[in-house]
Image (cartoon, rainbow, N blue to C red; front, side, top):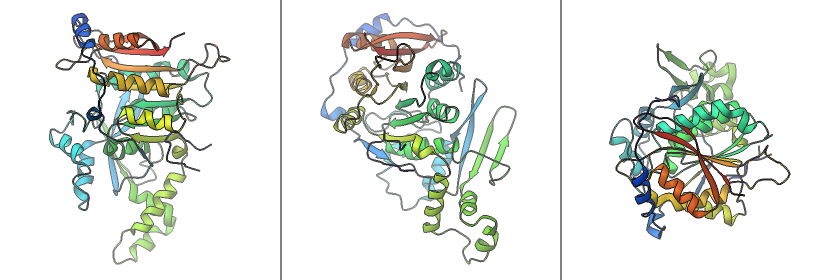
Amino acid sequence: MSFKFNFDVDIDADSNGGCATSEVDTINHGVAALACVEEDTAENIAAPYESIPMSIPRASSIVVGAIFCRGQRLWKRQIDDVQFQLAQQDSLDDDVLDAVKQAMTMGSTATDVIKNQYEGGLKTWECSMDLLAYLIDHCGDLFGAYERPRVLEVGCGTALPSLYLLTYLPNAQVCLQDYNRDVIELITIPNVLANTALAPDSTSTGDELQASSDTESCEIDIDYRRTQVLFGDDTDQIIGARTIPELTSEETQDADTRLLQRSDIQQRCAFVSGDWANFAEAARTRGQEHSFDLILTSETIYETSSYKRLHDLLECMLARPSPDAGHAHVPMVLVAAKSIYFGLSGSVLSFEQYVRSRGIFAIESIWQSGGSMGRELLRMTWRN
């Protein structure tokens, strides 16, 4: 069955979750922040909704680093490799990637958020590692009753939690949303491909795997895969006979299509970008509300002004409980966040209070890190 959650595209075919953090007094902060929750206005809503087709990066190779959690290994594209790709694309419109470029020039870790332009999607935030660890530990409990679980990750960025589900749950269907289209195209889609259709394989694909005592990285040779899928054992003879030993743009496009068709990832994964309000409106317009059994989100409650848009999206997209399913199928939202965001208005307490004030969802804390910089996991379910 084709995967339809991407609406417009119809396809036929540093932490392990247990880092120590601090206990903080959030009571006064939470009450004060709740009073400052703003209603959304037109100028708050910037990025339009876009459905983004999966495509292989316009590069001869991509460099990925290994992320380890609970004994599992996932591959994530390295930021300097993105910078290298952008430097090679001389014809690229400078305005298109302005926000992402600006974020990358601020520092190699790409940690900055530029309000209404760039929401931090280049960085793997520590709470996403907490969520990843929780999914690994509880995957059977969460998905055992689902034949084909439907998952949405809101504000996905590097999308590590979803990468785990796509890798280890072969029937999972996942929609990945980020504010920035550029983050989806430069980071999210390459990460999905690096863990599925283009997974590193140093034995047969020309990939260069480098490992030390505490790190692993790999240069995934995409051009090698392209020539192999086009020419097979005749690659050296055909390419070697050319004056310019490179694939034409038509050959590259053909090869990329064939490489994607070798995997079922296009049928299992969809990508959207834009503001949450625009995403929810697109779903309502197409009659595709309540599409997801599980919604994941990490580090998205740092500003109280975003609470309404986030809550409205969750209310729009979370599946309704089936009256015949009993307790086996309980649609839920998992929110990973810091207990308090210093210098910003958001906190776990203020978000919990906001959710309860709306009266739509029940919300509870299901995990706390403790320590000096507290982090939590929250579970939201429909109220009875």
